[in-house]
Length: 233
Length: 279
Image 1 (cartoon, each protein chain N blue to C red):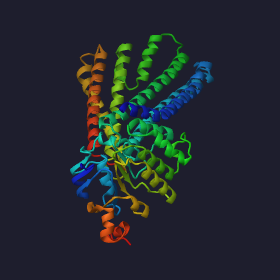
Image 2: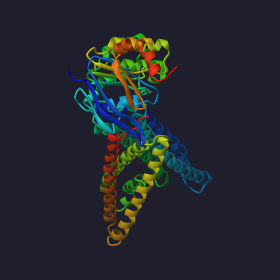
Image 3: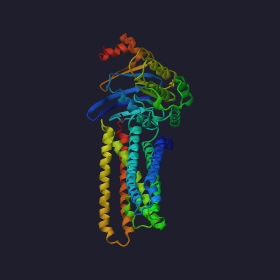
Image 4: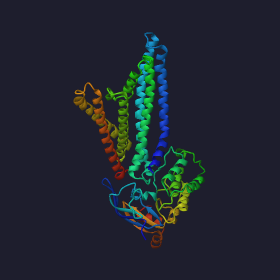
């Protein structure tokens, strides 16, 4: 089976700082992969390279056999850790804009999710709270029928309710044949949904294995094992 | 696809353009009322009211020039900030993950910005025309229309003093062509300044501003050198037909602007393609 996402000897340097060092990963389609590691470990850099926002210094990245470019961008849905919405745009225009640019975007699905927020779509983005902006971003990304979802800290700056809402959106809307690469803090809810685990530290992959295998072999939860590997109390 | 991005770019710029149009209209009316109207009512004879109205007119025209310069700079700042925000800050994550080629993305940003700059320039020309006509009417009455059109051409086309000596139609055609090339080149330079500024790890906006100012100063100096050279080699031999001097100077400056535009485009493309450094 062809891996959906493949990284071979990928390295990235920012000046003299080595952000990623010889990353090798092969992720098949149809998996939810959790990318975990301490802050500054290289998670965001790795995601930026996969989505074509950043170029690697060395190595090869391929998504469905193609190096990141404008073609892969049509089937990779990227939720960055930043707010990417234009403040002066209305919600309606923002949804229409996504529908205009991405052929795999479902406007109906977007409105189905958005209507739960009980916010009129004529509102401008700047009228939304930070949490609602995060929710809207998640809605926009998960309204796509992508092959690969790259979700960088989808629960950043959110409370428990918003976190549950975003998680629900992700789980109930992703394309089941697609791969979801999610970087977030480990919570029992997140742990329950992930099929595979990647630990990354100082720009290097420390571990890549099936979640179930880790639990069975180590006799503990992923969260507990994470704390053990990264010496987190 | 890029047409869609251009459409959205225009939609976002619409309110800024509308605001600029309103501001220029209001300023034009104010200047007309305090500068031109008293002259039309009281005349510019030797009476106290006449002298006062002439004095008011001169002050208001000066004020008007300042306001127009501020409008031009303001539009440049707006476009620069917009480039930065939509390409290199949070919104940049959306822009740079669109299924578009980098060339399409750059053009989708440059074309609306250049058109917006042109629209603002046209607004300024129309406003300038109104004030100028009022001023001419108040001082001379419309005696020699062609003379005033020629004066207007000289005044509105501003520093394009090199237009002097050309026929009116030829002057306006050359002036427009020259202005379009200048606008596109300036817009690309603005884009380049912002693109270089984002390469820095901190103070990205400040660095963009500094780079923009430095580049403008350097290229203004190049313009001045071109003028000096053409004056030395062309003006003398063709002193009886100054339009030749004007045309050659304009062609040289336009050629310089085209070269700058191409270089700015290529460097911006390379930065966007290989050196993107999103916040």
